[in-house]
Image (cartoon, rainbow, N blue to C red; front, side):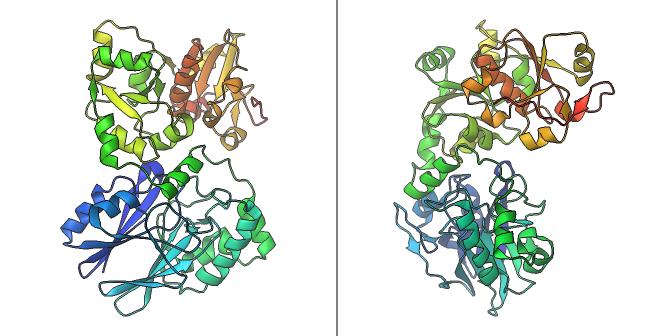
Length: 467
């Protein structure tokens, strides 16, 4: 028996490759399926099944592409409806792979079709369970994402029954393999590890502690942040199907000359710049949106960009394919090429370009007492802002900066000093403000981490939020 977790950090997503005696399954695959095919070749195994724990909302699954590449059967649990061929598993149905087996355990709550898969080893003993978004390390899946006509409280009630009757009775030594780790928006309190055991979770997971159904419903539904905007779109793509990734890549990986790039700009394409933040602030094509590959790139692209508007890319040299693939992971299929030679070609040709001024936190400290036209714009999440911020700072979370009306509340005659936690989100925000005609901008390097070290900057916890 062989089990490998394939973890994608920028989406906090865990897929799994399981093999026994030359037969294999892949659980919750990502859109780019090459890693699973490579493992299968290395182990001289054929992929027999593709198990999906539910319709994922935070990424586009690789189930359809992988089925086309291998002939494997896609398996979903009870209550699933989809527009492509799949096997509808019954609760308790057993699938044999080599000398081991996996049992479908229907655990609705996160979504109605949510299903875990319990693996029994060569001796028939429960060994591990692939819990999808039903059970995380330290948390359970949020019940407000893909619920149809049910309220989050109604789904939480269903989840309580799933946890109590399907998961809690499992042996303590059973390993828990969830679909997500820390940073995922599919839970609110996901721990730092990517695997655990049922026994440890019974002791440490707040949702598995002795409590009434009413207490459980309250604990899993309170303090939920708003889900990223693209979640509904991705869930729909996973249910209805999509174009093969190779087709998306062939269209997106077209090198464009400056002339061709400008023609695409004039036709309405969005310019997406994926270089490092510092490279972007030192120079970029006007009207570009920055979302750097070094951060939670796909998540922010899905949250901030239109899925309908065609995209043209400015990428680090050699990162063109990575950019297209990572966009495809969250459903973007309208990339129409990239600038050949990247920004250096544009600048050396004498084309117009723009920049954003970076400053250190101590410069902000010096400017605050002497400039009556300063606005400190904090683009962190509301809960981050509430834990401490610059006195009189304005909070406009980055995820809300697609709302032009929100941005319009900022005065263009102000000197806007933008920061986040460390400096990644603030550059994204600066690029969005530039597109709306705000040019008196300063990006604070190191963000809140550096600002709070300054001795004379006043810190407060009262909110000053744009609404």
